[in-house]
Figure (tube, rainbow, N blue to C red):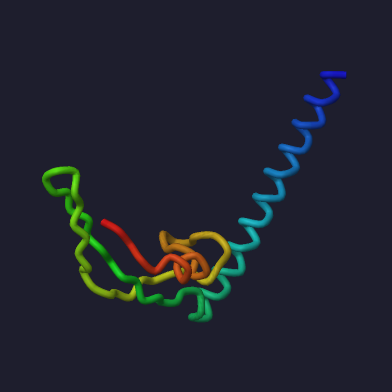
Length: 95
């Protein structure tokens, strides 16, 4: 009985890994096609903040400015750039 659960869990895990690999490969292929046609990346305006530690366990937060950040128009991050759908929801960056 216990061996059947372990075998079924292993099969589900392998299937999930294969599906993830297929999804990532498909996302990469679509992104490469878009990049070849000039629509693979976009820009999002991001606010950058600097957190500085002060005496007495206090922290000072300073706005460094708003900068354009390059993002990939894909499900997963591609070419070292975050995905645009994620970056549009996280427009504040802390340093």
